[in-house]
Amino acid sequence: MTPHPTLECQQAPGARIQLILCTSAPCFNGGTCLPDPGDGDFWCQCPPGYVGPACQHADPCWPNPCQNGGLCASFDNTYKCVCLPDYEGVHCEANKDDCASNPCQNGGSCVDAINSYSCQCVSGFSGMNCENISDPCLGNPCQNGGTCIADVTQYSCECEDGFSGPDCTLGTTFDPCRSRPCFNSGICVVGVTGTSFYCHCLAGFSGTLCRERLALDPCLSNPCQNEGSCEADGKEGFVCHCLEGFGGTTCEQVVEETVDPCSPNPCQNEGSCELKHGEEFVCHCPNGFAGKMCEIHTSISTACDHNPCKNSATCVPLAEGFSCTCPQGLTGKLCEEQELKIVDPCEPNPCLNNGVCTYVNGNFTCVCWDEFAGPRCEAPVESTESSQTMSTESSTLEPAAPSFTSPQSDPSSSRTTPSSAVSTKTKWSC
Image (cartoon, rainbow, N blue to C red):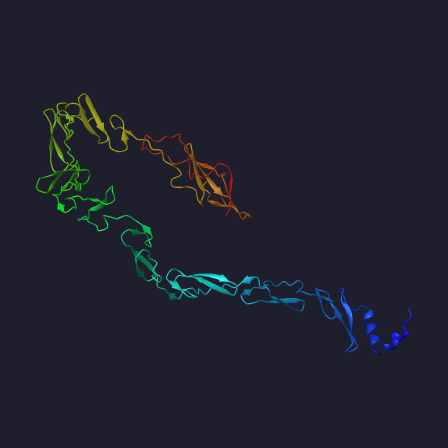
C-alpha cells in the first residue's frame, strides 16, 4: 500500500520513526504501544495484572491481595500491604484490639470497634472510660413518695405505707406486722383479714406479744447424749439415764466394760473360781483334782509314776490312762518320732551366676544363661551373641538329705523358684 502523499507531507521527521518502532510490537502480554512525542520514543500501556517497561512482569498487586482497604506496593516481583489504621497483618486482615490496654475502669466492659472502643459501665459509673462516679439516687428512682438511700453505686428505697418493691411501685394493703409488735424474737403472723396479727412465741415465752417468760423444761433441748433419756428433777435441773456403755452427767463418756475372767467359770471338774487382780483368777479344786483349771485327776497316779513319755516329754494323767505333751519337733503317742520336714534344695539358691533353680520331685535343676554352663552354671561359655538367653541344658543334682520338722509338708509336691522360670529354652533380651 502506497502512503497517502498529503499525510506523509504533514508528518514531522521523527513521527515516522515512532510509527516504525511500534510496528515491531515491543509490548508483551497484550500491552499497547504508544509513541512518545516528547522524546521520539514509545511507551507501553500495560493491561491489568502486568507491569514493566514492556509489560513483561506479572503485577503481584493484581488483584489487590490487601484486605480492609489496604494499599498494595509492588517491588522486585513482590509486594507489601500498607494498612489503614486499626488493621494489621501481612494482608491487613487482623483488626487491632483496642481493648488490649483494658481502658474501661471500675469494672466496665470494653467493646472493640474499628479503630475505636466503647465502655459499658456498671451502675453508678459513667464517662468514656467509666471513670466518673454518678449519684444512684439522681432523678429519685423511688416512686410513690419513697425515700432513696444511696450506697456508693447502688441505692435502696424506703417505701411509704401501702407500697413495696425495689422502687416502691407495688401497691400493698396495710401490714399489721410492719411495726414488729412481737417481743423476745417472737414471729408476727398476719391474720386472715389482713388487718390483724398474732405472735408465734419461741420456747420459754407466751402471751399475746410473747412478753411472759415460762419456766423452761430442762429436757427440751435434749441434753442427754448417745441416746440417753432425760428426766426433769423438779428443780429446774435434769437427770440423764444412760445406755449401757456410757456414763457422765449427759452420757458423754464411753465406759469400758469390765471383763470378768470367772464368767463363765473356767475351772473344770466343779472347781470354784476366785477373781484376783485385773483379769487374773485362781481355781480352787475339789479333792482328787489339780492343775491351773483343775484339769488333772490326782487320784490317777500309777499311769505317770514312771513317766512313759520319751525325749523329756510331759506326762499328763487322764481318767483312763495318760497323754504325752511333746516338745517341738517330736510327735507320736510317747513323743518318740521326729516330725518330717522337707528341705527346699533351692533355698538358698545353689545356682551360680544368676542361674534360676527349679525344684521338681525332690531334685533341682539350674537354668543357666547362655554365657554359663555346668550343673550349677559355674563354667563360663564363650559366645558371640550380644543377647542373653537362658537354657535348661544343665545337669540335675540330688538335693541335700531332708531333715524332719513338720508332718504337714508333702514330699511329692513340686516347686519352681522363681515362678517365672520355665522348663524350655527361653530367650531374654537385655
